[in-house]
Amino acid sequence: MLKDFNLLVTTERILESKACSELWILLKAIGEENPIVDRIGIWGLIAAKTSIDPVDSVIKMVKEIRENPTKYNSLFRVLPIQKIVQTSIENIVEASKEYSTKINPEESFRITFEKRRSKLSSRTVIDAVAEEFQQKVDLTNPDWVVLIEILGRITGISLIHSSEILNIQKERAKALFADKEN
Image 1 (cartoon, helix red, strand yellow):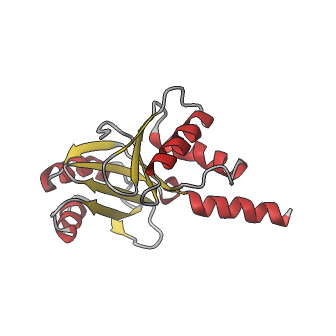
Image 2: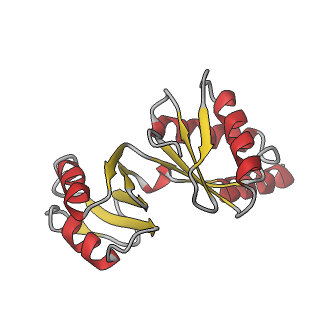
């Protein structure tokens, strides 16, 4: 399992190998010279390590998908990961705590949380992280997203804008629909 990753990607179960190939090609297309892409041992998930900032990678991927919408069929979502910690409520809270200072007091946030292979209570983790933030919560249109992805013994965490989570299927649909209008 690739433990030092900065992109987490969803795909269809049993298509992880094909998705790894497509992600490698996509990373090369956006300028990554030596992408590292691998399965992580959880159905429907693959991870990648890129030297490009993970948020910048997602922004570049959107452009590539729009230019070549039919080229990437196995990839679903691309999530930038800025920090990786050992899974525990204490580690997740500590890693999330510094993000609270990066959000302006008048801005809003939401916690997006997914867990796999963990018995930690979702409510407990979300409540513990939320206590570190003084800003207002906005579940529908937040300025910021605190992304927490628990993958068994490791957890990926990021502070991003909603637009910095790439939904490849939606981007493909937008690009294909725009082509038909022109």
